[in-house]
Image (cartoon, rainbow, N blue to C red):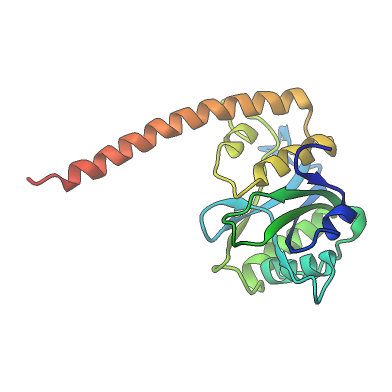
Length: 218
């Protein structure tokens, strides 16, 4: 297995560990962007309270619930819809670096749940209307653009955003494992994303310079 990767059984056998579960909700679609670019698949992520992109989910209380039960509870709070997630949907478990020696070790679990397109729409509606955490822990659901526009936008631009923890790696791994994006297309998107990161860094430096100029006495 890759560094830090565990089987589900190995993860559950870890003593003194906290467990966090997140899920990628996705569906196939025949819709097209502007009537000409196939979208092919819908993947949901969320904008978190801290401005980072991530997947719905959270910490599980192992003394009271199973991994899947805890994940379903978090989904109800964050997307406002009761969804069933099973052990068959489990894709990955990894050790996460501890924030300090006093913190319990953390194991992150990642799931992928395939839905119908109409179910995805129901999740999107409920997340903005009935979800308890909307506007607080969760600022909104977003779709991952899996296509590439003529100007290079789409997936490459999306991947250049800021993600929480290993959410970007979880997304990339799932795209490859579920064959939602061809490896070569994904490689090109990531290469373009690196260039976008460089331009963003330059823009941030310019913005910072503006704030410094405002601080100087007139």
